[in-house]
Amino acid sequence: MSTAGATGVAGAAISVQGVSKHYRDVVALDRVRLDIRAGEFLTLLGASGSGKSTLLNIIAGFVPATEGTIRVADRDLTRVPPQKRDLGMVFQHYALFPHMNVFDNVAFPLRRRRVRKDEVRRRVLEALDTVELAHLVERRPSELSGGQQQRVAFARAIVFHPSVLLMDEPLGALDKRLREQLQLEIKRLHRELGITFVFVTHDQQEALAMSDRIALLRDGRVVQVGEPTELYERPAERYTAEFLGESNVFVCDVRDGVCHDAPTGRMLHTAGRVPGTRADVVVRPEKLRLLPAGTEPPAASNALTATVRETIYLGSEFRSELVVDDGRVLVVRVPASEPPPTPGASVVVTWDADAAVVLPADGAANDGAANDGAANDGAGNGGAGIAATSPSAAAEPAAEISSPSTR
Ligand SMILES: Nc1ncnc2c1ncn2[C@@H]1O[C@H](COP(=O)(O)OP(=O)(O)O)[C@@H](O)[C@H]1O
Ligand SMILES: [Mg+2]
Image (cartoon, rainbow, N blue to C red; front, side):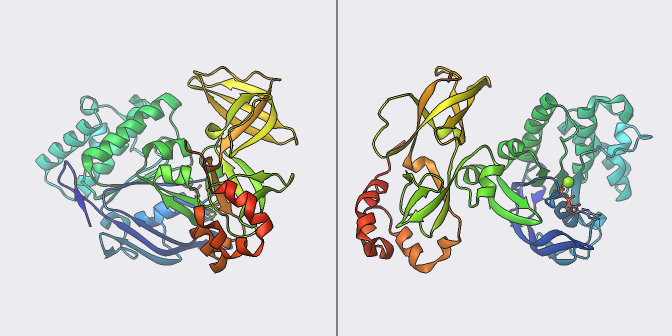
């Protein structure tokens, strides 16, 4: 259940079991289940008000849950007070004692635990060394920069060798450059300490950059848990796709396992049969390719004609907005090594069938019959129940969607 890091302290697993929090008529958390692995870096990601701080504070013991259980390292902590939970905590606002110098701030948790004096000194210097601040022990918080104050807060949170470190938007008050520098330091800290990190942010970029796994919260519920690449490339819901990175979404009617763009009726090539009757087809901006107007797109890829509306340069790439002939706007990202899309230019936008993520919109993925068809996709189209009952539609499109091009 645990992993030992450089300090010899083990990371603890955390199990959140059916946790709800109600404030009068506000449901801040709704029966949250989440298993955080020993030693992992897990990020709670979500929009403001989605319940991230409430969940972290319930794990820490500062806020009681309305219902549910918190277990850490297989121990039920639901009714254990915060100071007896062995969890370090860092907040967005450094929460240092202004009248104490750096040494005394960091020593505080040890003195409260009645650790011997020489041991206090050794551990405080060790913790300050970890955050590269051992030379500033005499300073008061007011004599430190924001980044330095936050490093002191980190030192104070790890000085008693907790098995879990909880952080609530710890970089939220810092400017961009300092943020990015501290992101790297927090990653290094995690690697060196080997303990479990639970990190809260509303910033999807920060979550993608730092986490072993991300739990995405929405309105007090966990929408999806997974590795950053998994959430980005295989979102389970349209909400995940739109929260993490940019997305082009086509709302589709599904007929005989094939997606048809709802406003135009145009067929969209996707990899495999699609169950149900409604689907959202999500295509990331970097998966779109632009060809000069009039170019014949590759076989079995999707193609739309469009006009470039606006292009901005982002250093490593261009980001352009395109207006499709039916008036909708698509976002495309083009590597900076390629020619910039010129505003006003007519283009052909293409993407491969397997570049699209298909999200059944009517829960059809759980429907027995339709699901059988989806499971047997590829060459076996003819054997699927729905396709067999409508041979006219099954013959052509099914052949097309069963041959996704390779990337
Ligand atoms: N002490 C409180 N009293 C009443 N409502 C609260 C309290 N704390 C949080 N809430 C509500 O619970 C929801 C979740 O809040 P919070 O956990 O702070 O979200 P986040 O940290 O994701 O921004 C919000 O609707 C918020 O207004
Ligand atoms: Mg919060």
